[in-house]
Structures are given as C-alpha cells and as structure tokens.
Image 1 (spheres, rainbow, N blue to C red):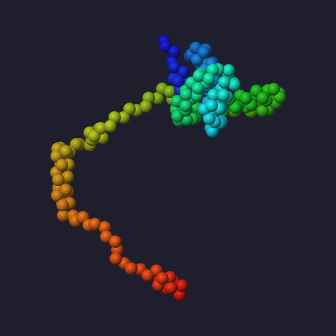
Image 2: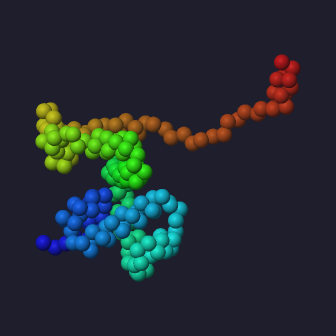
Length: 205
C-alpha cells in the first residue's frame, strides 16, 4: 500500500497523537508531521511573521535545509484553510497539550493538588469514564446525499400538465400587456427655492 503524501497526512492527522501516527505511517513521515505541527503552532502564535522568519525559525529549531523549510511552509499554507474549518480539533489538541504540561510542571513541584485537578480535567474533557460502545460513532454517520431536481413528484405534488407551454403563454401575455407602458425620461424638477428666505423664516421662529 503506497504511503500517503505529507500533504494528505497533515490534512487528516496533524493533531493525531505521536503513538497513533507511528502505527499508521513510517517514522520519517511522523517526524515531519510533528515538526509541521510544532511550526503550525508557532505560526498561529506569530500571525504577522514573514515567510523568511518562519524558515529561519524552523531551521534554527530542527537544523533542516532551507528547501525543506520552505516546503514545510508550503504544506502548512496549503492545509491552513482546512485546519481552520476544523478548529475544534485544534483546540482539543491544544487543551490536552496545556493540561499535560500543567500536570508535568505540578509533578516536578510535587504539587499533588494541582496534579489531581489536571488529571480530573483531562479525564473529563476526554470522557475516559465513558464506555467505548456508549460513545457516538460520529465518524460512521453518512451525510445524506441531495440531488437537485425540478420534479415536484418527489414532494408528493402532482405535476401540472404541459407546464412549459403554460409558462410560454403567460410570458407572451404579459409581454403584450407591457407594450402599453410608456417609458418616461427623467426630468429635473422645476422648483426654485430661495434658501436665504428659508433661513430668515427659521431665525424668526
């Protein structure tokens, strides 16, 4: 089975966990996806950054060549509209990242109270207490296909016989009636207003 392109992987699995990515794709593809994810996050945090700034940043962080850095930027720009439309997935991933980071920081300080709150928040957000069979299989819901039609029988309405002929008859009828309508050109109103007198009247009131 051919390996999907990096564009396809990023478009569908940019926020998939590293473990799941490794189970789906080769290690070199996963490495690049993780790098693009990191740089996508940097780009969101620096919306005014120029292309060169992005390239310099990814080169400094990961030591890759300039050509590959520009290609990473190209991939991000290509999938950015799709990612934006699925922003809830991004924010879910971002929330989990923040909670896990909070937990690790609290663990280093041996702050068990904060660790407990972070773990509870993580479990509640990801619904780990819900059995798998109780979860809604949203990914299996098939979108209802719709096809445009001018056939009224799909709504249970009996079609009018010879409807096209009747439409043409009405068009001819109303066109003939409109021949009596006179077109009148626009004319300037012949009204002389003395604004000085008007101002005198208003001053005296």
